[in-house]
Length: 204
Image (cartoon, rainbow, N blue to C red; front, side, top):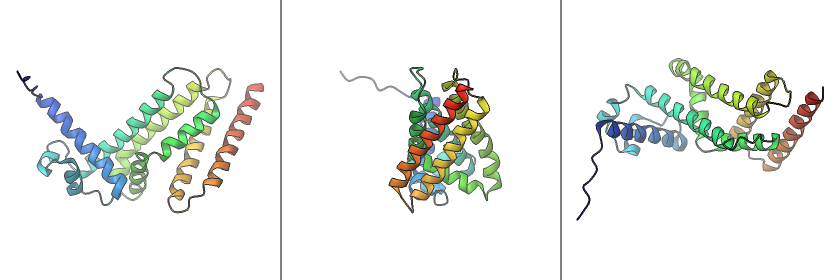
């Protein structure tokens, strides 16, 4: 006797459709870029009609923002997983993790949207609080990780965001001018610099 099919609720169908649209938007931006990610492209990738899309999102901008929020949420979840056991990480682990997240294919979406926001005021305005929230999360995780070492919180926040910006630039340039040997040397120097800085301050 065959099992009776489980019927999904309206809310479950809604959640599934939104998930398909957001995932298709992320995939499209990552593969063909922000400007070529049209509503038609998103619908084709998701299998959702434009009518279905507009039942959940009022505009392309709304969908782009939902995709940016999802990318930020994935970064946040990755940081939580990294510290799941509560054991503090070393400078080398933190920097290696930060570089890996920045080079992750999903982060390409973040780059694309940030660059587009430079010349699109509406996008810039709506992306600003997501960006702020993401950086505050990263800084808070860094402060918590190095708690007990006596390091000034402001310095920890500055150090981690400086490293992220360094890896952002490195990643973008690497698409057209990859230099793995320089990148390896840069990571080694960064670990040595931050380690020495931490030891000096902890000794004061």
